[in-house]
Length: 315
Image 1 (cartoon, one colour):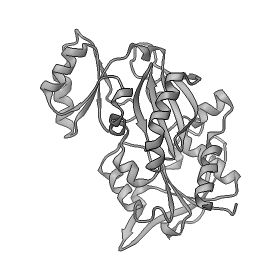
Image 2 (cartoon, rainbow, N blue to C red):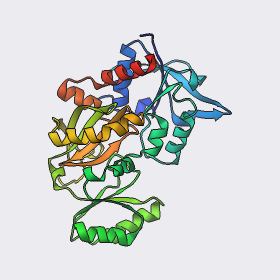
Image 3 (tube, rainbow, N blue to C red):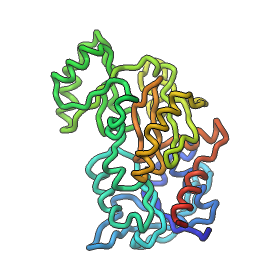
């Protein structure tokens, strides 16, 4: 197909780890197909009346550490003139993130925004998943301290985490004999007005937390992330170790159950987290795992994503 004009909304390029960053994999694949790339950061985007403008720089990328990108001259561009915008800035999912989705809504779907900004705004990963309680471990989203204490009394061993956090930051395991729950709630609620997510601790996490990549609702690859010794968090940002993984019948059942929702909402690239037999999160903001799956399984899921984007643009 004809070359696409692709704007990549992301964090500073100099700060990424090119050996693990999924956005970088998507950029390499787009460039290999002849698509033209521009880069910008969220603070360099603004709405002027009905026009969504950004300070963009043409960019070329290469898989060379320390020399992985090269910028051209900066220009102010109307993003509605792009064919595709990849919304790939990392969370936290805060008001700045939400505002960015409102701005991008002005150009989507004439310009294809991946993922659909309306769906991203309505589907933060720890809340979209709550529409599938039959697939999850017992879970509470609450500000109410007594409700949290009652949940802990019922389930004994629990995980407490910020509702809009990421990368394993602020995730705590509270064991039955732990006396720090009250202080932990004080700390969380002093720092934020947001509720907490509380889940029953699943011992199966010691064997790993599986990240499954779905493209337009179809599961195409997975990695297992094993927590470091002495840590209950499996996130790779928190020291989790990636290893190869195959999908089980239960995981395929989970994927089939959520696929219609993902497809209907335009959530083209998602990553779900599964511990044992339970779905714990649906990641829609800036999913990761493409490069790890490529190394372990030889699967180029970046190519599969671009195949889907090209079909959508051609249609």
